[in-house]
Image (cartoon, rainbow, N blue to C red; front, side, top):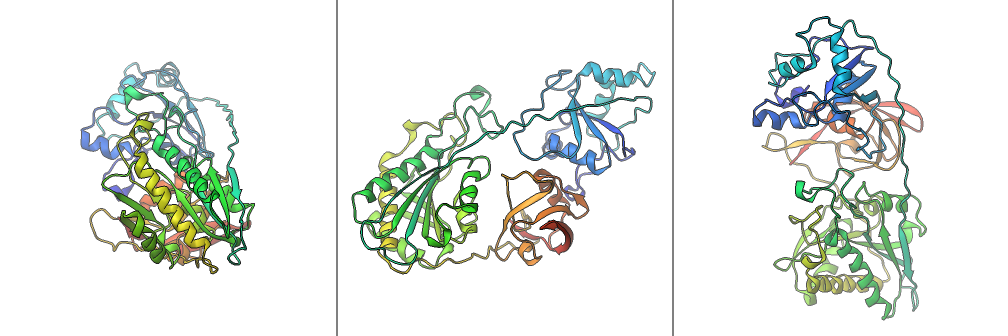
Length: 473
């Protein structure tokens, strides 16, 4: 099925009552649809979405089969590719084409087979719905084996060597050191010729890790009036897990941190353009950056937004003034071709000197930068390309039934609705939420400017509120 918000009528459940029944779904999407239709349907072919759709209609379980006209035809395809903590909220299993054919055989009609069923659905004709298997009865037993692994942050520090400058005696520098391995967890952008190859991550984020070490090497040879904390994060690629763990249980109290500087992809300086993000987290950053850039001479792109998809967001949520340095994306991003020979080492050295100059200015000022909570701006409704915006910040690292919020964006719809860090969203606009995937799909039933009921848990208590989505590009 496709949500009504997409203005594309497609619902294979339209004529079926699947409450307390088992549904059999084809693994992919209609094979014979035209390119434009496939583009619409691809978003909703994900097994997470199919599981949510079946669960929302009351199904007891879901069986997945690769049809005879699909890739891996008839094979029992493992479902262990998904490395997310979140469960689907429904019993799900993969079956072979032979098992599926035995179910269709209960119809007693040789003309009604898995192949004919797929053929009718492959056109993506919205008037072709699913069909019942009234004589089939089965028992399903599934076991979920969770593989738990431990990641480690690496933290060190340079102690102050002279009298401390003020009441916040720490400055922190950080970068994530994890990457994608062989790209086996689904976040690779490798093409077929690069499949299963080592993703070197020279820019993302060996460059950032090297920058932290290089700034530390520079500062180690100088007098320091604040302690300098050196942080190397694990689990960033899985959802800022390492830096979130640090902020939630900091070995150094966050209220003693004068500032945090983050480095993520700083090895591909091009045309002298350096992006500095999260500058809105303190009013002093504009002046400090301008002064430091007199010697550095970068063509700076200044972005106030601290709600970035990197570890700077964790410290912003913790109320620490922060900055993120970034030289931009490129065609080697999340691919094995992100190799060391493509790094601009001279540019990286200049970024190190620039960041060290900013740290010096923070250390020499007794009054630490004052944290500013950024009110994120949204685009007005009615413009082409806008999408629903709720202002929630999900927690990717904790296993709960629902969507755990690690925070809400200042001035956003979630904050206006009274939602806060630690709340667990379990229903929105009538859609039950078992995990972050459900929440992502549920956003598509929301309409900009129209209030929707949100059911959530706070400290074990079930509560309700109305959230009015905004819009953003």
